[in-house]
Length: 237
Image (cartoon, rainbow, N blue to C red; front, top):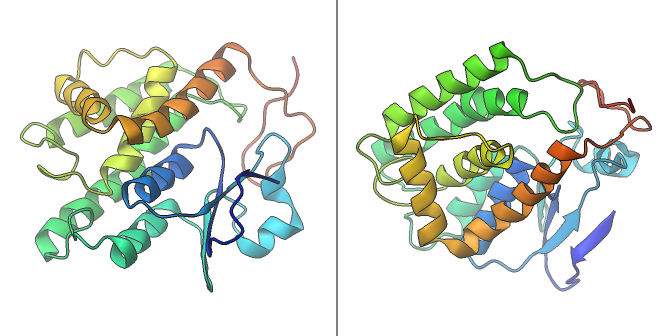
């Protein structure tokens, strides 16, 4: 593994894949909180996440992984929640009020269980899955639901930016990477466009991943030398 932004004085480290939406969401929050950290690039194509060294940090062998002093944890939603609880002095990104927090938690769960899950199936890059009428139908279903949630909201979980916006933005970014048109979902399109306009510093993090996904869409990587414990990876034609 290589260090993208070496800083040995930082106690915090994020093991991240450069075009992975969950990793990008965590990086957006770290940027929003102005936290200094060491970004460690995990090369998925080379199987860095499958090494014994990485498994000692994250037995799930998934990316990202956060190290904050003596805390080591995976699961991007949990990372987002922890970072906001620990470092957001404004209290706005992950509100403490139970009902407001419940909506944020719901949107995080919605993204993980349905929205990003369906989009990921329709935008396979590394894994050997095919884009089909069924994956399209499931993606449209997820967009229909999210469009409903956004009817009266400026952001994903209300009228303020929260940690829920980051994973939903980076999931939606995958659709833009394959030139998927959002015109049929005007509230989603408005929210997505507004995020880019209002927070260009955070959007640029996602845009970097989008450029990579767009490239891989046109030039599928050959991962014949890499194994994954669950998903079949793409082999050479």
